[in-house]
Length: 518
Image 1 (cartoon, rainbow, N blue to C red):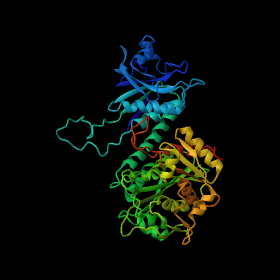
Image 2: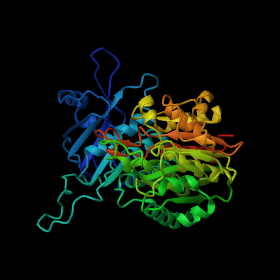
Image 3: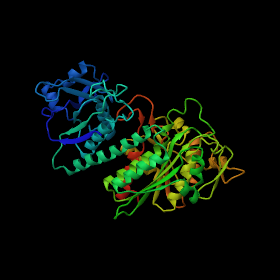
Image 4: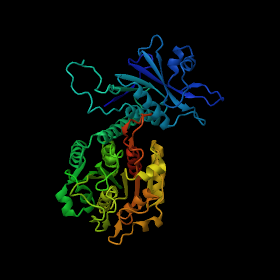
């Protein structure tokens, strides 16, 4: 893991491989111009006030995520200055929003992979700004290298990994820290806890399905529980059969790796509220008998991203010592085709007692979530949030970077949306139209697992709503778009698993602990 250090050193005296400063686009003229962000003063002074001019000569424009490197001025301990673009200069008060700082720090950290230490002299005028820079840098420095760089006795000890990838930046130093600034120190500690758990979620999502399956995922959760004082209960196949968890069993019965339902419970002695978080954990999704077509299977190790997010959020809540009880439910199964697999036309009896006619075995996430939502509801939490890579329809509706939010309570949905936007996770509130429910009527069972094709993401939300306990505020986050990034990295977002929704869930827990959600 990349280390985070707060330093009182000046930019010129820090011994590091590089010094990061921010630049932005001026909105003052049509042609624009480069503006130095707060934090770059010492470097600019060493360039006789001409740093912006030098950077423009090198082609820098201040565009978001743009990186320009140049030799450090004489007398600086760091040999390189890296200028990273923040985008347009803020029109209002001149202060940069947290997400702009996160993305810039992430871009800089990625550009410095292979380096041991870098000083970040980006705007940190407030503890919030410092926390954003720390988050962005620590997330941007992430790399999944567990399966790279097999032993090569002929290679030098400092060789790159097998595919030529460099190791992530080893240490991030935030410059300008005040030794007695408790708020700044708290922001840094929070950033470390949250980003380490996001990166843990990313590792799980990126792990190949031959190594991550329900039992091994449950083992990871159990080990983390022991480390962080979280009570963990794992229901194996026998316990699921005894409990009547027909959804989980039906989805998992086609695989040699049996399903699991994992309950994680973080409790605080002074907590007044309880949140239940439910995550879809399909460790590999072939589609089952309703087999996915060629070209749609290769990334299906990411279908447990919801469970990874829930797991990470519960651990982060424990590490932060939040004054709220948080229970996480990981609905884990592997969806495979075999002679034992559930068939289209089969009827499953869910944990709630409701029967479901399975019309498409590739609509499996809602089945495992249905069981987990009912079980979570039995404990009467104040609110339930489920997270799932649930539907391709949501990707068609909102694209690859935005998740949808559905809920049985408009105010709760609005709160989740505001929280997501606050922490920098793109989201959009979606409706649950009552007229779409009729499409799931079944002549054989209480409900079918498929309805109308149009509005499929909303249909899935309506299905889940059937399994939420009466009187409990519930929200459903469909993260099918942003959970796994297949394109080139940008900002602090890597290629592969992203850890989508973790920050939203953690901030929800913080707000609940503070009594801000009623």
